[in-house]
Length: 269
Image (tube, rainbow, N blue to C red; front, side, top):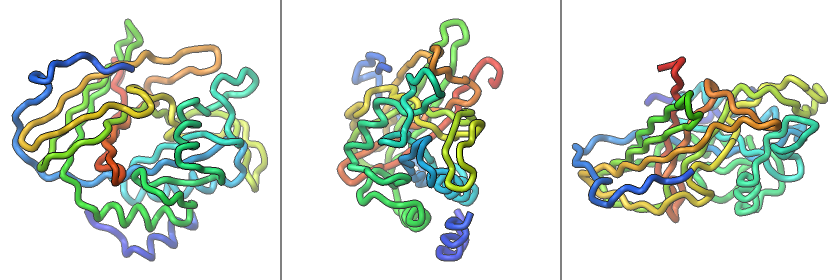
């Protein structure tokens, strides 16, 4: 992958649920070793009442344009600027799990970001450098995801396949995110925007806040399956065409590798 010169790009960026029961013997399939390309996970801690957060969203857009599929951004609404998803007056985007992640990192200022699950907490003008640096870190792991919505049952089925060139272990965490959500947002320049478009919004943990403990051996793939019902309530309605699944393996050093795939529906097969 080719990059624009590091510091020139930084200047530009600143401007602008449950795991199916699978026997251990059936989880591993012999595969040929292939080269894994790095994908960086950016957790954006944000809030609808945070007037400075729209500028951070624009920074994410610039990073996404630069790095494409090698960057996965997830906007986690949390903290005192967040509006809970069960709010009956406004469309809220803050999930209980998001508050748990927020508190674990000790985040008190918004917007803030975590790159590949590693401390320190960074402000948006530090994200470009951190993403650039982590993209150069080699990873032995590949994650392949398939996600399909059954329109009859409204159940999202997710298959994850992990393969590696060296033995490793950690926690596999699977999330649902959604883009194109129209909901209010406070902005330092424009005030309250009632039809703000929220992207990459954290919606749910598929396999729990801490995910599953997994071990992946070289020469084999570890295959795991999950499912989660499509949410459709009076306060929270997921639009299937706007959903994606994010999966990442994390160990004591941070995120080893991440992957993202849109949820396939009968309309987009």
